[in-house]
Image (cartoon, rainbow, N blue to C red; front, top):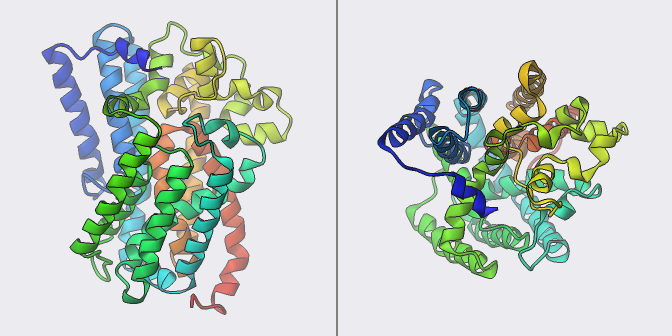
Length: 410
């Protein structure tokens, strides 16, 4: 759908000035919450930045109405504020978090993480397509819902584990092994070098946690990681026959869903066959037999693609928060969408409070929490999925509370 970018014309001084102001706002918002301008939420900031450019270009060319531009900025900037507010308490307890990471990865936690990554490598080798075709088809299958939580928890934990173990003399070798496993799992999944984002998030998280008990990777080790990761990223792009121009298009197409909704005369058209219940939580609606939730063609990205090209190619765009809201919750119904968002942040806050004083759970779950905050705005479906996973983790932490005192980490 790269032809969609033809709608985006970056001409005129006024447009560029508005883009600069809007991007400055993205950089400044974290400072209001005591965060670094560039922090572990950088992916959320980057994806929003490209969406901002697309929306302002659409407004300048009269493809997007005044109401739509207000809706977009109010939705996205409010969500970024909530995301920063949710992240701040995590780094405020930096001493506990650093100690938990060091203890976890110095013991059995590091070994278990490597073992789980071996399993994910094998799974991706056996299941994921190797010809560059869409990964989304098998990820929407019912059976994958049993695998997804393991991948969601293990992958960010592995990226953090790589850097933490490089600071621990007896774990350095395992740290480099985990680096190779994590890169291999990413490439075998068909990803276009997404492991670079994962490593960057982990590095920025450790930097945000700087202070007492800081875990700092040596400069020489950072260069070693770069020497491995960058060539592997180039290999992954070449393997999928992705050119530099394709990479740039991919970044701009973070805003693909917004082009297909805000630029349309009928922003709600793709969502008209979806029940309100399924829009709020598709998984729960599907479990209760909701017909619209059980129809794969009504999944937000797929529905947009089908509307645009006539068929479901299983390569639909992610359900960007603002696009999902204007399509599924028009007018006063947006309150329902924000109810889901409120539940999401409330559950993450409850989970964070429950694990902060429990090192085993803190080290295992916190990287997932940060990853969730990073990705949530880019896909409303992830918000719904993370609500489910957060509820599951809250239930699992109850019996683990008693066991943690009896079992050491190694």
